[in-house]
Image (cartoon, rainbow, N blue to C red):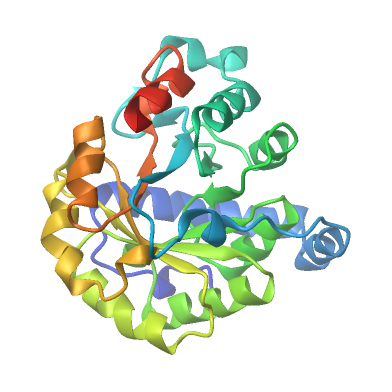
Length: 282
């Protein structure tokens, strides 16, 4: 499946560059860690932690935060100077988030563009009890198996990068491997596209994310979530992502019955990410 013919041909430039590189990376990973090896790792692995259950409560009145561990990004570069080399400590940041009230942790595992690594997942899980989602550009079912083998409790799927068939196939595999899913959309068209796929899926632990970042202009606007929320029948599974910077933003989301937020760059820009989360939730 990891070939150019399976990837949408209308990707924004930033995604197109990442996807092109990622396809080669996947091919290399398959040689280094064949599926048979990953499956043997899974056979010896601990059960997954309940990512979906830690976030979804139809009666929730407060906000539950997926706090993200993020070193750099294509648009921002290195988020803080001390995150270069050995100055970046995922374990310390995870402990800060856990102590400050995070409900789950998002871990960037893309190396080239975001400075992450697959090993970060188990390093984080060794020091906190929170569930961890692998945040990466998943283009091939292999990466779902790879995520489970390396300790992930959930995976991110980006609708803009995947066909209907791929999304359905990956939801099915994630379900088989006991992984929750955060299915992310950036546009109204993709939100409408994934609705029937979710309804037809047997995977009942899928969260629906609306990313507030415009991929063509690389700007964020919280109104993107609030403008699209009426198209989502079950708001208890809805996650607002990107551009959330203040308690007032969470209050605005709650006024639209959105009670889950994924926040990363705002926290990671602060000298103490845990204090930033604590202030956000206060």
